[in-house]
Image (cartoon, rainbow, N blue to C red; front, side, top):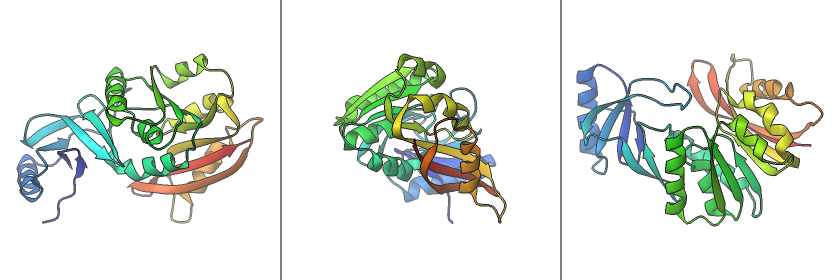
Length: 256
């Protein structure tokens, strides 16, 4: 019997189903994976200003706290308080590998610090990581201390829109917008704070028919936002399918 689940630290997360079915799946998961200690079921989709999910305890230890290891980093996570997706581990590695020593980076949706810490672990960059969720910022601070980063990670508790005003125009070499569904809304606010030839990493959801290119669809949406400054080059890829003909797309843009 093949069972799909996400692994976050020593927690397995399955999709919500009939209770007997979930208990059966949980028993099999724990038997086959001795290092897993908890099975939770995701009861709701990501929702609210803090982007949280509701979970049901199915089996094992009754907790939502764990330590997750990814790309040479460790992250303290409490799934009842913060949003976290292990499925973006490869994306976080790809972005971290792009950053060079000495860069100043802004992560407008920092969460528990995954993108930011993985960058600062690799290079001597200075990363400002913003989140509106105080629990995410608290865990991010713990994660910074746990990872002995080479660079510097500074946390800011604020809505990303409000946080920008504390910085001079053209401060950043690179800006991350890793919140599909909201990133394009924040993009016009971020552009003025990017240095010439700076880079934006943006994630967005889009619907596309079989004849349509999801990447080109996102690029068209993004291109309408740029005013005087131009997109010099861009690279895009489909990160994953999130529903019938619906995709998460990643765009890396070099801005004039």
